Image 1 (cartoon, protein in one colour):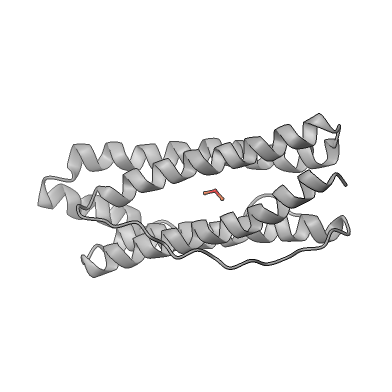
Image 2 (cartoon, helix red, strand yellow):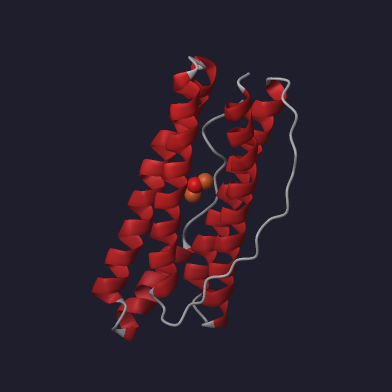
Length: 169
Ligand code: FEO
């Protein structure tokens, strides 16, 4: 496989694990604030990011590529308001979309169709991730300032359950 594509795939393992760490930190913030539903939503989000990391890890091993695990950066975002983590989440997902697109472009440049096909799932997933993050912001804008509505929203988010990714390698 092309060296640049392999390096980007390897780096994405780290980026996805950082995403998991960032979302766990957001869950941590909401737990401290007593919003267990929001915390649940982001704990599940963190699990999904670990799944994403494992898909890149597995794809690399399936293609006999050497995986090198690097240090995971400390989550360094500070949250003041209940809405802050939601904005951070959306910005972060847009960043991850740009990373996936960059790997896709690099793979396409060298006619690595196996990798572009593998990444197709992530292209769709990023659309979903950005949509979810954006909807969270909208709901918070609509309901966040009223305690009773916030309680209902928290209950809604408490109902989210984890499910494994639909992509199996
Ligand atoms: Fe792994 Fe939230 O993208």
